[in-house]
Length: 382
Image 1 (spheres, rainbow, N blue to C red):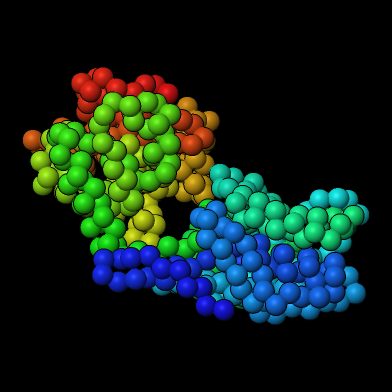
Image 2: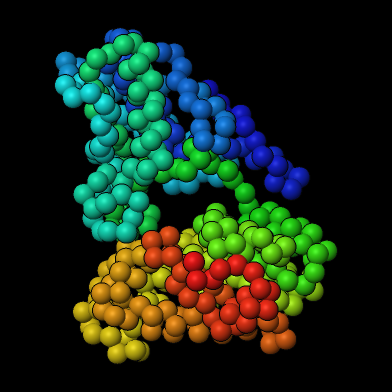
C-alpha cells in the first residue's frame, strides 16, 4: 500500500516516508493482535505525531507455540536513506506481569556509552518510538480485554551489516541500527530548497530592522524561549545546518547585528571552521574538544576519554570531572568567534551563544555579550 503524502519542494512534489520507529510500532501492534486473537488484520494503522495516518499491509507474520511476529517495511519516501526497504520486525510474547515491555533483538543496536537517548545496556530504541510501541500495544490489549502483559522484541534482519555504514559504531551503539523518529514521518527536502526557504525568511525579517538571531532548529528555539530572547522583537530564523549560507544571506540582506544561538553539538564544529554542520558532511565534535584540551595541557587520559566519548554531553562530563570545562569552552568559543567573524566580515557585529540540554548555558563569545547588552533582551544566565 503506497504512502501517498507529499510536500512541495520548489516546483516539485516530494513523497513523505515513515520512520523506523513508526514501522516498529505498526509491527508491534500486528504481532500483538496475532498473539491475542490468532488472526492478522489485513491492514495496520497508526496516527503519527505529525498528525499523518500511516496504514500498511503486514509484510510477513507468523506464530509459534509461545509468540507471534509481524514485519513492516521501512519507507523513506523521496528521502530514502540506508534503512529504506528494511523489514522491521516485532515479536510479541505474553508475560504474567501487566504492562508492555520493550527490548531489541537481532539487528537492533545496543547502547554501550553514556550520553545517548537510552542509557548503556538498553536497546537503541529511542524514547519516542518506545512510546509509540507501548501505546500501540496497549490499544490492542485494551481492545481485547487481555489480562496479561506483553513483551515486544524489535529485530531487523540485516541490521548489523547496515549499521556498519552508519554513525552507530562511532557513537557506541553496537550490533545493529537504531530505531528512530521524533514525529514518525520522514520529510524529504533538498539542501537548495532548505537554503531557499531560509533566504525567504531572512528577507522577510529584514523588513523589521538590521538585527537577527540565527538558530539551527528546535533545541535552539526552545532555549531562546527559555531565556526570554523571543520577547524582544528581534526575528529568530531557524537555519537547520546551513550556518555559513545563513550568515552570507543575512549580510547580503543588510543585517549588521547577528546573534547565533546553537546547541553545542553543532556549534563545536564551527570551531573547526565547519559551516555546514550536518553529520553527513562533517563530525569533528570530539576532535575539537580533544585538540583544545591538549593545547590547554590536559592529561593524556582526559584526551583519550574525549576521543572515546559518544556525544558532546559526554565530552562535557569528562571536562567537568577534570575541572576543565570552563577553560575549554572559552577556548572553543574563541575559535567559533574567529570563524563566524571571518565569514560575516569585520564590519558585522556577530556573536555566538551555546548551550546543552543537560548542562544548560555553556557560554557566549564576548561579541555575543555586547549584542545582548545592547539589545537588552533575555536572561543569558539561564
